[in-house]
Image (cartoon, rainbow, N blue to C red; front, side, top):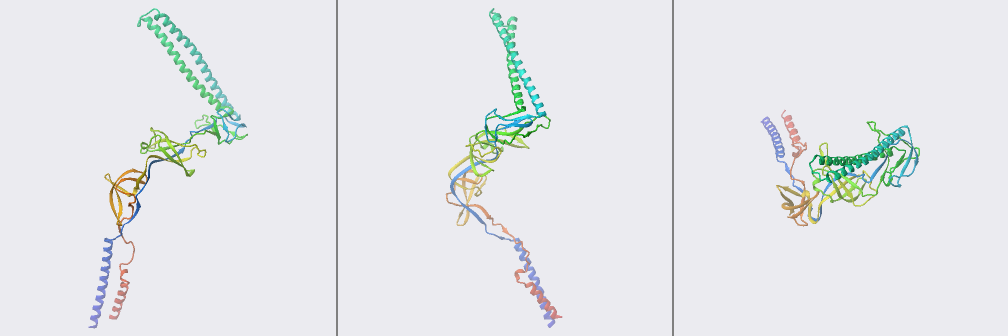
Length: 421
């Protein structure tokens, strides 16, 4: 009888353990299939009146439109300096004299020969013009004193011949005028090339000399391109007092939104704490394509001159396309638009409630509300916790909620078995 009771006790202990395992496992499975739902939390804001600005942004650089390089193709040793950095110079003013080296002399002689040849061509073209002018005049007089004076009928051989002689002489004269123009252009080009190769360096325009560092005894070496032709070497720049301009590239999406005259605000990387104002003065509507991307260069002129703004500085521009003042504004994150209908959630009694609104201007951050809301309304700008189900990811034993029952039962069972033995 005693053994029977002991065996029965052991049986119930084992049954209890199995029941604990089944209940604990079932609870875990139920929790996993029915995760806890957290209450949503909302970020709110207030409907306010203010100014909304719609702008197109772009980045670019300060243009070099008010700067010209002082260049030379001469090579040799600097013998004399006539100016210093920061001086005001006039167009054609001497900058420096060089003692040409062998290559410099050869280059100058070649440029001089080309200049003299171009000058001879101009003189010869002018001489031919005088002859052709005389021939045209004679043909005109022959026509007037001939068929016109004698009332020769149009269409007769004599009339046609004299009229054709006059027209041909006139055409030859006009063609020679064009030849002189072409020859003069070649002479101007050869004159510039001769000046670039000469031992004297001149200022190309009037302005302030910048970036000039030549000293007496400095050596200027000959410069050539990859094809072996001569190239110019920059030795300074001359800048003028002009309104700085910013050139930015706009996308094909943004360029239709702007027009000449639009106001802009500009910031420069060099002066991040300052903001400058200007307006759009030019839009290249042809644009250019690079690697399949179309860009439209747009030029912005600042409202004032500023000597601190230097060529090629990086700039960011906001082109203002529209603006309104004293209107209701909400953060754009608060507005949801579906199928053309816009809604905003307002807080009532601690709960969000959707209302239909009519929107106006939309900027990068804000949206104008024309109707549907009032100043001071509390609105939902974002949902911090959406109310999604939360799921436990811990590795706690399924028996942890039983306060160590598994260990006690096992110990008790073992004890009972030992007593039975």
